[in-house]
Image (cartoon, rainbow, N blue to C red):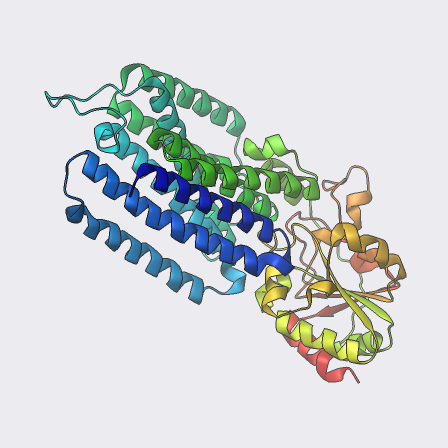
Length: 484
């Protein structure tokens, strides 16, 4: 396979990846986007095998000897990915995404170490005849250092994010509450400056021990950046780690002179950064605080000060809620993480279908950060085959709450909390779904426990609000039976 053909195929794969991102921007085109992504990755993988064959010929080494390792890696990696994708529950999708990010980061670290150890094997420099370690160009050293550092931060940060998202580990760093301590930001700053110094010294000396030291320091930084972030901010963390993994791949791509890695990594890095910015706006967070890992402090403060008083609420049964819904003309459903935990999306679709048969207008309102990752609620509703034209984003649906007869909130909390409109509140300025404007509000929760922000929700205490306590799936199924 000629280098011209390889470059052309990489270009085709890149176009497929761009089309994949475009397709994934909307639910109606997401299937097509996934197909483009799969086709592009298939072309990229096969082309890379051809590239390895070409490089083996240039180095006058046997390609067949290494082919077994290449095919073995494809079988093991592809098989593991297929099994995990088939078995994963939709509620566990955020953990799977965090795991994938960690693997991308670790791969970048391993590749960087291999390149520094034997740069001639990657055709960065010619192999010295005397067997000594050849001098790597300064530009390549910088690219390798940045790729390895970002990859290591992505790996360890994603491991912490995985534990926080899972919520089933007793290890303190894996628990949803932020881990904060005195002088935390100063420590991060000192370690960050030390990392920059190590990179500069490594570029000047090309010593392998310094390179390994900067990788270890990056692993530590990845942990310290993520531990002060609470569960409420996990959607931003997931998208930011996605961005980090892309930049790590792009950095390694520059060193290997691999256009496919550069383009694909840049696409992932930039799209992840844009998504993170959108998430930050949706949560009224500072984008730069996210990058520096400092935005968990606010959540921690909110949680610490969020002691709640005992107050009376108006509660009812699933039958009561069904009666109200059955007599409404327009209903807006607000899904939250509680719906995901209960796996109630199919029951909700059935309830919406019954209401629609009775002539009730039913719409779904999606907050950008509802759930544990960007688009979590959209994915759940898509799995239940909820019609796309019934699902509306916050900007499009907020104006309709004032005319809605009923807003039914299923497992959501902070994203509908009117405290976001109160000056001095820890979540002041955070855009919310304005469900409190509906004529009647039905809220399903397991208990009166606060959301991740640790704040009481005034919506629950309004005269027009009825609380229906219990597991979302069981409650909604009872509503379905009771709707006449």
